[in-house]
Image 1 (cartoon, helix red, strand yellow):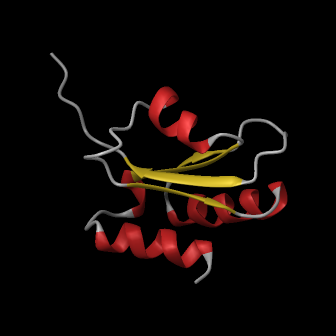
Image 2: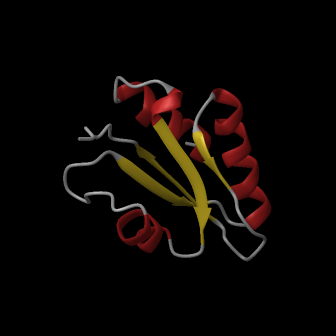
Length: 93
């Protein structure tokens, strides 16, 4: 199964819409998910996949940005992993 389809299936099966998901690229997707975005490894809905190349990873992210996901790619480097997670609404105040 293609990476785009796997991520799309996860989004659809989560009951969420694309606007509730963040998609990006990273050299170290585990660090990005759990240390930078503070995703809960056990209770959150997330995925990461090796796209094989930086260009392929960027193309996959672009597909999901067009569908309405948040996220993106910030800099050019050798990032070839695509990661995605369902964003959680937090109460303020």
